[in-house]
Image (cartoon, rainbow over all chains, first blue to last red; front, side, top):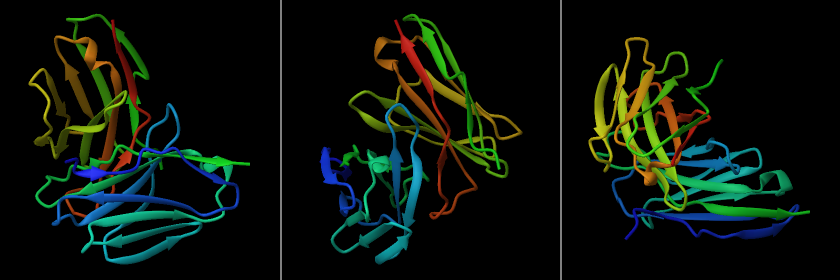
Length: 112
Length: 114
C-alpha cells in the first residue's frame, strides 16, 4: 500500500468550474500536509499547507483536512487554463525526520 | 528574496561516471533536502542535511551521497552512475526542524545517463 495516494487523472474540468483534488495517507500520526503544483518540466511550487482539521482558504484555493479519515483535498474555484498542471500532495509523517512523502500526483486539465 | 538555486540545469554522463549536483538554499534556511523524480516513479526522498549534518536518508544505495557546507549550500554526489539514475534531481530548503516548516524547491538538475 502506498503511503500517500492520489488519483493520477487526468481530471478534466471546464474553465470556471471547481476542480476537486483528493489525497489519502496511511500514517495516522502525520501532522503536516502540503499541496504543490508542478508544471510539465518544472519544479514543484507550494500552493498551500494545512495542519489542522477543517478548511483553509487562500484566494481561489481551499485545502481541506480530515485526520480521522486520513484525507486531504484541494479545491480550485473558478479554474483557469493556467491551472492545468500536476498537483502533488505531500505529507510529513510522524517520526519522518522532516522528509516529505509525495503522492504520485493528479494531472489537472482545464479546458477553455 | 532569491529562491533555491541549483546547478547545473542539465548534466549528461555515461554509465559508471560520477555526477556532482549543487544547491544553494534560500537565505536563512538551514535545512537542505534532495529528492529524485524519475519518470513514472514520482518524487522520492534522497537525503536531508541540517546544520552541516546528514539527518536522514531515503531508500537509496550508498553511491548516493552528499554534504552540506558551512554556508548551508549542499552537494549531491552520485557515483558509479547507472542508466536508471536518469531523473530530475530536486533540491529543497526550509528554515529548520519544525513540523510546520515548509520546503521550497529549486528548479532542479536534469541528469541523463547514457
